Image 1 (spheres, protein in one colour):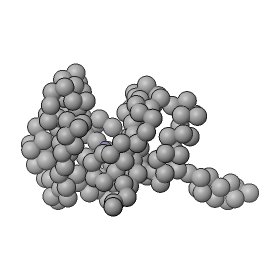
Image 2 (cartoon, rainbow, N blue to C red):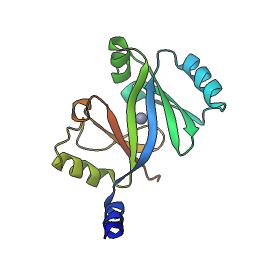
Image 3 (cartoon, rainbow, N blue to C red):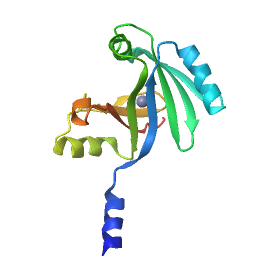
Length: 149
Ligand code: ZN
């Protein structure tokens, strides 16, 4: 019975794993050097998402990743975050198979989302954020792979 229930949950479990941890940093070059030394490997990708005013550097770490976030503009979300708070963990990103249906599920559960529809993020992902006040102070990102055409 327990095994059946476990399999049922597994089948309908939409959040698959922690895809990455996002870390907001003031000096992206300095932080890249630090994390390169810490993880003893080079980043596999750097990418600027101009619309969001953010520059990202990605490191692989097992089956998860570390995403360093630097602001390209002071009035971007990361720029505002860094002007109010210290550097540090900014968000946790969970990987999901089907972002649109997961958005619906979480809205039905009463979670507050920062947007109702997925938008393109870095690293070939579609993303959406859940408001920190829905998650005991943690900004949560959900991401799915963006199909490439
Ligand atoms: Zn992220």
